[in-house]
Image (cartoon, rainbow over all chains, first blue to last red; front, side, top):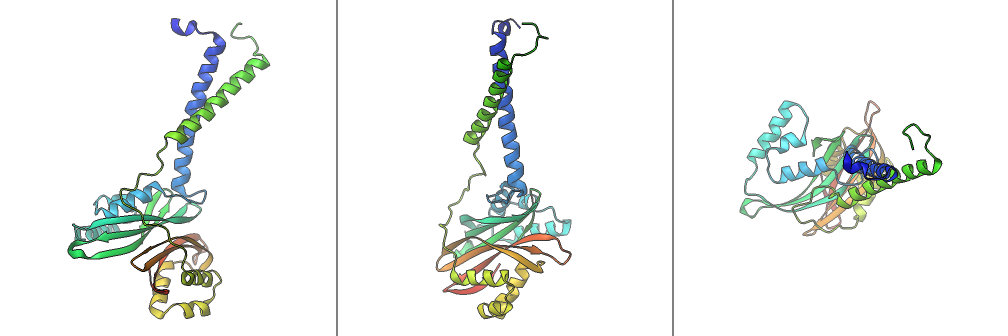
Length: 141
Length: 139
């Protein structure tokens, strides 16, 4: 191209290297941080994105929580769905606190404390422990 | 310079340096622009210190000290604890991950690491509920 030919070869090469290096650095960092955070390979000290999405879906009574929170057999998912539909719909989450996590290998556990103001002034303060294997929430206690 | 001419050391060093510079810049840009985990739409409670009574329970579990555990917890709570740590049969580590307090009730979270009956290493998370220096429940 005419425009590129006006740039000295050395500068052109340098610009190309900066561009390629920048792309690799950006994409590589994104990939590595996502894989490491979601798999718990390096201890899983931080909050996992799947755990966060799952716990938000649970406290917001989002029916998608069954899809986000479990890869368990059909019956278990159906039971979860039933629980979700039976819960009071006007419950209002007050606080959601991430307590921390622990892991071994690809298995990590993320623990939250939830405060909910349910209908009729009923107040609940309870924990949720989410077990993640290979980036997927497989159990909610 | 023709395309097939050997690259001088200075030029090779420059190419490598610009590539590494770009790589570092890419990492920095990612770190600056990354928003991390999705934001929490709700308020969070302030962290509380680990209650002494739950620390004693964690120590008893880690040391496989059944006598201490029986002195610390009543039968109902012991049964809840058993359910909470199933299917762990051999606890090798206990980690306190955090605690919060609200209206005089403290939730203290732990992660137990160990083995199940077939020798597989797993972790189980459980939360001890404390009211007035007494453990009143396990989730």
